[in-house]
Length: 194
Ligand SMILES: CC(C)(COP(=O)(O)OP(=O)(O)OC[C@H]1O[C@@H](n2cnc3c(N)ncnc32)[C@H](O)[C@@H]1OP(=O)(O)O)[C@@H](O)C(=O)NCCC(=O)NCCS
Image 1 (cartoon, rainbow, N blue to C red):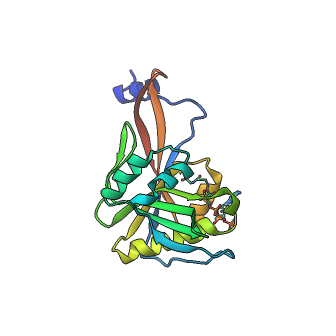
Image 2 (cartoon, rainbow, N blue to C red):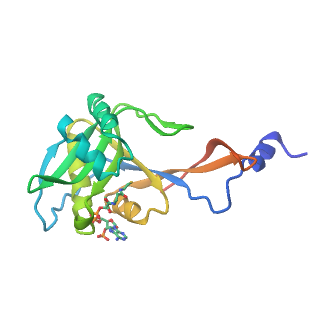
Image 3 (cartoon, rainbow, N blue to C red):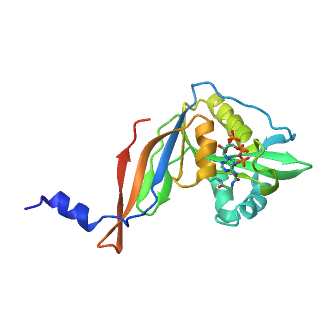
């Protein structure tokens, strides 16, 4: 007879072509390259007055109120501006981050999580995201962080490329599963040696 664990595994198997969520980590004590793009930007940290623009730039996936609360709780948004307009931002948090209803990422002291990075479409593919991430990592190291964690679906080719170029390595894969193909259950977590 199959062991109970094996039975549960077969009942909760994910769809054949499910895309895994990957968790990537960057050791911030290792060298950080900050190559400026050809286009010049000024840099500053976001304040409460910026949240509406930040919410709009990410298509209101998170509303302005949500971003304002995030600021109040200590999250930081590094902005790149040109002619007084926000053209790119990177959002870092230092508190436990809920990836979805069944999974929360616990952040130890000295560990930050990259919630989102965005470059305005007209400026994408010109080294801006790489520069912004390098600047963010430098700031995080200066404030005592030793690790930056990030996460995304493994088929987000551009973002995965940006992260790999910036020195991240894949640490874990989360495979989504549904009991009997219907009921969401905690993902299967696979440690990755890179
Ligand atoms: C992801 C994003 C921030 C990257 O910023 P960017 O300024 O366009 O990226 P860069 O020009 O700095 O490129 C850095 C690396 O990303 C990858 N990359 C960038 N554009 C790419 C493309 N069109 N196709 C494949 N890989 C690409 C490459 O690995 C590139 O390094 P390379 O130029 O040496 O090949 C930007 O595309 C974006 O804002 N996308 C929408 C929001 C989003 O998906 N955010 C990520 C959520 S996790």
